[in-house]
Length: 344
Image 1 (cartoon, rainbow, N blue to C red):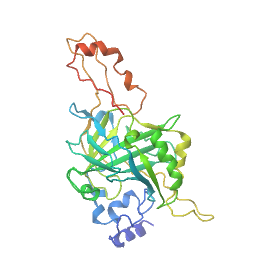
Image 2 (image 1 turned 90 degrees about the vertical axis):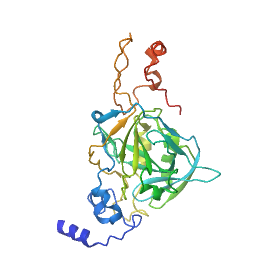
Image 3 (image 1 turned 30 degrees about the horizontal axis):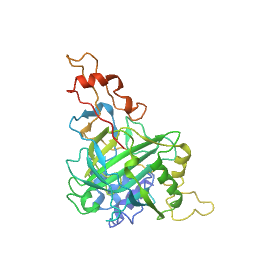
């Protein structure tokens, strides 16, 4: 069987357009992630040869605190969008018009550039442990929302930017189980009923991208790639430090999405989209920077110990009371770097 696979790989013409070739997230299939760099033509060779591929495992012991890291800013814009079933994922495409402009992303590690949010790719599992692409110290989450934006200061469109330096930015929002579903994620979940089959699409007339982010300004950033073909290594990633939430019942709705354009025939097994994740890639000695204050040493002139920080991927710590015991202390010692909460 193995020699048949290699024969197929060697002699299939490498002229497929990415949109035409049925690449998949199933590693047992020829079109799976292990074959992306072999079968999708030269434009996708970097999927297997690249040194800055995504996703990666976020290990706390690799984090480097960056005191100059700015908070991310997303325009509070209500956007027109549509959700489409691509056969590999549920993708939300953001519209842009004079009447209803798109949302922009600035701040963070983006060097002062403005990035226009183009789409959201949604990754999810059929169980609670195999849904996110990025992992936190080896742990996967049920879902991951990836907001992808292109540098509109330098480039005219997403395609051009994706192949160019400082071209793309991506925000990864992890989704964990909770008693209720975040409101904006609930909108997307309800929309899945209209995109069960491949190529189906539904309009989202009033989407608020900024409300898909948790109430924190902490993030981790690194240089990586688009996590699906063509895997261009032009992405500045920002992984938000806290998850948003989805209920178990709503999570199951995502698991109903199919890779096929129609209902399977009698006796056929349905081909579900989930799980649609790429395995984590080699870290390759990249810098993993963060604005999370990992540790603050007590200064000699301070009478109260300063709070210690460590990387967290949950919202068990209420950000609104993080410094409640140091209010007077803060007023007396303005030389310390304290963070204000992200006003969403």
